Image (cartoon, rainbow, N blue to C red):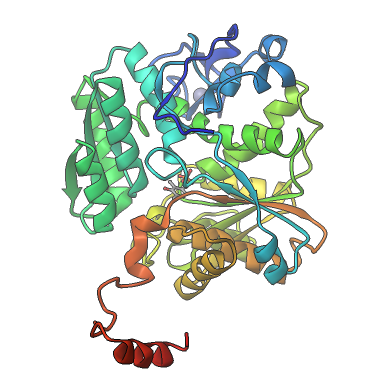
Length: 426
Ligand SMILES: *Cc1c(COP(=O)(O)O)cnc(C)c1O
Ligand SMILES: [Zn+2]
């Protein structure tokens, strides 16, 4: 199989299942448009679907014949026209992980390697959908508040869509992530403050800068739906079923909760049985408001004002979908684990040495959360487990190694033999 830079258009017939927006709190419908809060109660708007209609054109066979991108499941995504051309996003591999499974004492472990997206993180899924809607609504600039990965995704997606990109990031973000967004052509505004401050600024500017689609603000109802496609693909790749347990990181809680939504919607259109999946979430201990509430049995999620962790991509002190995440963890028999930075680094190393996959810090938190869930008996030996790897390790290499600190060896066999002895590789 060759990897295409752009996705081929979907050729099979498309009947949209998308049925407009509705308030998640009071249910009041709202027409599709660049809006994200309910006029009536200020609750968050979310996408709704006509599942009977979506189910008419979605069979296992029609899906199998489609291009290997997230648009395979277009009827269950918030678009009302055929999927656009663009970056080849989604359909990342679901890899068996036998060596890692053996180390963890599990029998069936899979890695959904979403670091293999065009800009090396799962955020390409969210942005693909937000950009499709942004063009449809007539916006010319794609913008975002980013904990790192969203910035590069917005940059690349804007480029391929012929739009401008403006990204706002906390000033002290990993240099590799800022550089990636800049190199892809975005204007990067480094804001003096943590993510929640950057996000608040984005909320304000989305009112002022009228030509801007701020993907995680005024296009959030569309943006967040992209995460469901991870669940759609996992179910298809497992042979049309949901796993016993799925493990994912939590920043705003969108990916974590949309995984369940994805399985539920596949069941609603008759593609899988009703899921019975336990949802395990991971947060860094230095910014784990949902993990803390879960651990203490509290219903209140207390915001973390000053995140203190190496895991920048998950450093959201006030998660938008925190309550829903807590409810999902409890309702599904799962858990939300707080992972110390040292254990995150150990987990990154474990994944690298067992399966040859280098993940960023968020992936370390995810695997660290699985280890904790196993220790606490939330996940057992016979469970079929899927771990979602959301970002690539090249983006956070600095926390693992410093590639320039090794000895410089004289080019002689003697000198090399001395080095090999010292390294224990002779
Ligand atoms: C954004 C992000 C997440 C989680 O995001 P949510 O806001 O919880 O959906 C997880 N991993 C990585 C690498 C990310 O960039
Ligand atoms: Zn409402």
